Image (tube, rainbow, N blue to C red):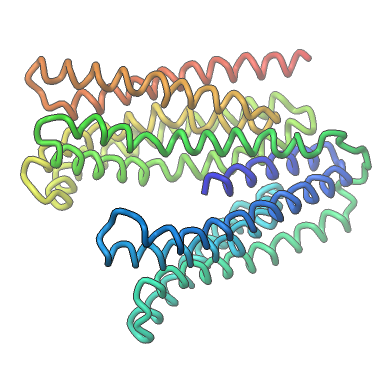
Length: 392
């Protein structure tokens, strides 16, 4: 997923800026770069999938788990190498044309086909774990076909209406795409490490099982609540990149501020009241023990603030990427997840226990502080970058 996200980000940003500059030849350059990158990545993941088949039997797991992992990992990785990575190009083209609705429909078609095939393979053909993995692979073909069709429509319209008549070349086209793709992939990996670090911290505390379960409930609901903000960040990348290409820095700033304001309203006016009402019920419904429910209740009440503090971070990163700058996102992710999160979480847990509260309460508050600090610093950096771009 990290590789897919990185390549998609790099290509979407480059294509959108080229469209803003009305540079048709650059669009063709960036597409060729991505074709070559996929031609390397896809066989690489195919080899990785095959390797799983031979490595899995030697892993220190129960026999049934090893067999399931061997089948599922091999089928999913090998299949995804052909269906997932080749969807990067049509998906990026559709987003570069700012048709995020079609991106949504591609995802819907993927999920619908996946559910239908999953049901068929499991309950009719009785293919077990192989059927689950195979349906996931085949489901992505539906989204790929839909994205290809929409990308073809948009590209024909662009060429027919001569929206990109200029033919300047990017002398560093590969660097333009991969210079965003690599930092974006690494940023995604750093973000994914948060749960592992939290579980490690909680594992050494009293009632670790209940605390880890409560955090899992909290984390999943935070991700669910952040979906509109994440969707806004996805749409903000091509929006800002096209305006960067046309030199409309004021439009970029205006779009960013509107998205931040909308996210704040959503977090406090929508998520806040909903969580205030349903948090106890959700905690009791999802928890398997009273102690887990007790831990989860407090965490769930903080979800609006998690959305608010996290939204600025999520929205600033695509604007930097729209400017062709992938390093700021990686630097801020390293600061947040590599330097702030661990010490603040440890201090928060220590202080919570010293005051007689569960360690997970201090952990959740510490994560909010880390998120808020990194978001404020990221926004200040973004503001200075936009001002420098407007003056330069």
